[in-house]
Length: 293
Image 1 (spheres, rainbow, N blue to C red):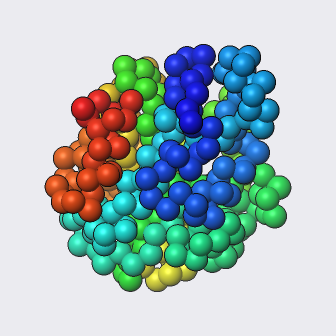
Image 2: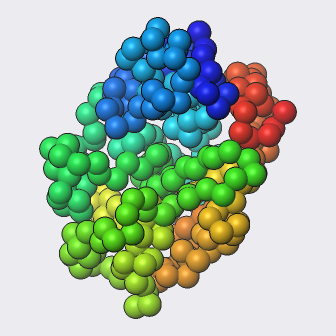
């Protein structure tokens, strides 16, 4: 069953109906039960609020970027085609393991992978034990010699999206724990021109995922890359294209060659036209924000 928000966004009363792959997976149950990832009751008509007192998780929404990531990457994983992503980046990876929001898919657990949690607790010690939200990488593709950190964005067409910037009050400073963590790494990631407060805030999600990728690559003895996927039908703040903003992020990196930019529309064009992906293709074609139909 599906209801609509006041803004006309379709929301499933059971989030599992929004999934086309492994809808009962424990990772999705964990995601749906997160208290800080709920749709606001005020976004719905009174009759919906009255009938569904528990409300809805973000992943019940047809506009959820998390659902888009899950349906696409899980579909490719289920038929052994995750290598398509690596091929697009000319990395030629043998991807063995898939993670969503730091959870290892094949372990079917609501717990974050312990080896990633250990790094997060060192990088963001203020979030230990679930005290505060820590970095949640949308997808991690892990091969024997390389890992790809994937940061996904969606957003409505013809809008300006704060894709990677830090939200919240401007007078709230960046946490110095990140600087201390970077100092412990044996590699210089950022140029001397990097301004921690300004650039750290502007590229907040990219910066954290890049830093986490560097730490995990040392822990797992691999190389690492950062891939961001966006909707080509919208732009970043100020009317800048997402690609222009991403290029600005690359300019603060010592070695920007391990960072990649892609759109969902580009991914759509490389999907194999084979029967096992027909459900994914139909789902993507009907997606309200991608304009693929």
